[in-house]
Structure formats: structure tokens, C-alpha cells
Length: 88
Image 1 (cartoon, rainbow, N blue to C red):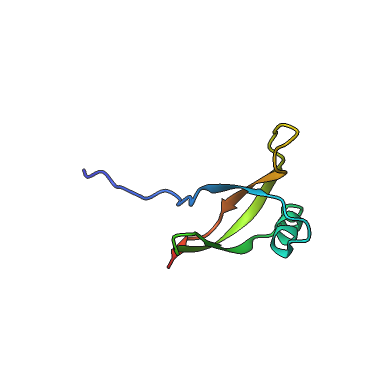
Image 2: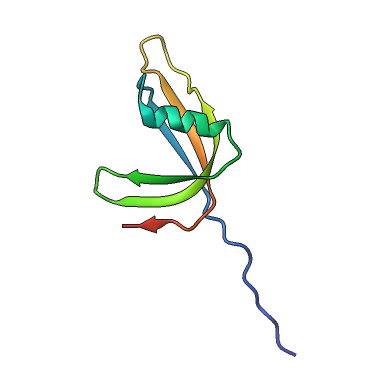
């Protein structure tokens, strides 16, 4: 006989982003609101190199990384990617 090979499920993985909190920033406000939802959201990540990635993901966590008294207030947000990643 012959061994039958099959592919398993594809997993695009997750992405953790840490950034400085900017009061009143519309994008950050939308991201924080998405964390309270069970819905997928479309994301477009633009890197300083000009590379762009687009995908759909769940916003899973929004943690506050620690720091000393003089540290910039930050948030760490984890995205669980539920689509292919389109690069341009």
C-alpha cells in the first residue's frame, strides 16, 4: 500500500505589539474597544520600512507592561490572526 499524506489546518499565528499610550488616539481607542468583543477585525500594519501587512484578527489581550516611575505608559496587545497575511 501507499501512505496517504494530508495537510493539517493552517495557523497564521499571533502578533504582540507594545506601544506608548497616546490619550485620545482614535486607533488605540478602537483597538481597546475591540478587545472587549468576540468579533474579528481587519488590520493594516505599516512598518517604517514601507512594508505593509493586512489581515483579520481577534484582539485577545491588552496588558500594561511594568516599568519604573519615569517610564512611558505602555500597552501590550496580542492579536490572534484568523486569515492569510497579505503583504504589499
